[in-house]
Amino acid sequence: MDTTTTYLGLNLKNPIVASASPISHTLDGIRRLEDGGAAAFVMYSLFEEQIIHESRQLDHYLTYGTDSFAEALSYFPEMETYNTGPEEYLELIRKAKETVEIPVIASLNGVSSGGWTRYARLMQEAGADALELNIYYIPTDPHLTGAQVEQMYVDVVREVRHSVSIPLAVKIGPYFSSTANMALRLSEAGADGLVLFNRFYQPDLDLEMLEVVPSLQLSTSYEMRLPLHWVAILYGRISVDLAITTGVHTHMDVLKAMMAGANVAMMTSELLQNGVVRIREILAEIEAWMDEYEYVSVAQMRGSMSQRNVAEPAAFERANYMKTLHSFRSDPTGMFRG
Image (cartoon, rainbow, N blue to C red; front, side, top):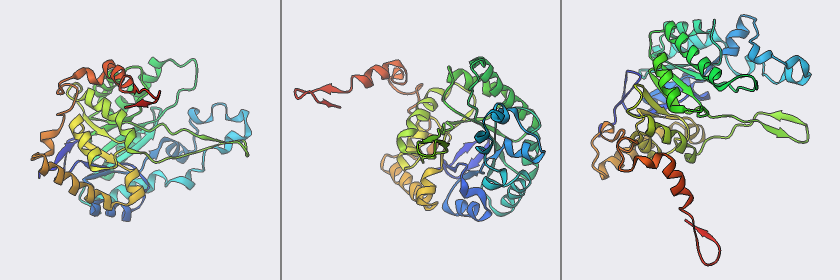
């Protein structure tokens, strides 16, 4: 079976890419990803805050209002305690390029434009094959309009695009008033690929200590439905490569991603839970499925179930909303059944 695909101009041996995770914190972890069968990997993210920290500056997105509440000053972790600094990050890129043959996709996580784009160039110089820009911003200012937030995203992408020549992917969240329009604008700003979607990490409340505490839950396959929906809608409409990154756990998840129109399926939670050996197991299951259903290549199936190719395109729009609600029928006992 031909499981090859392309993503960001890179020729990949299969559609499974290891997304950013603690596994890529070390060279040994990166080797294990390659040995496990990953076609490429996204390095853990270098945060804008780390870059600012190194230059002894404070970004207003972090500091605004914190002096009003003493406890807020301790909410952000010390930079050294949760990640390595920019120089260590660049050195790991260099070592990874010397050690493994699969593509290395660097990752920048930030919200503002400015000096941090310098590190996009340094990542390129260190040997990164591509760059994933992870824009994660929660607009809490009631005076900040949706249009202003969207323009901020576009400006950041355009500035980074001007800083590097390597392929650029943009990882975004789903909470735009018009996701399709934002996809188009990001493409026009210079994005070569879109990664759907960034998970919205929500804190929990400790009622005994009266504290806001970080809370991380690994994904489930169910969560893939949202990015699957939008990849199927965007396929063939926007001139960018597409990646699904939330909820990819099984071979069926990968197959669905391809049929919706994704170039690659990105996996993290499954690898953290069950080890990188899962990649080869999933690839074997994909090939067995392709053989059973007489698919000769991943390219053959890609986009076959996108909105533009299915018999009922309205299934991806409001009609599906109504059909889903009516999929539960009441029986004589008063219970509902699907």
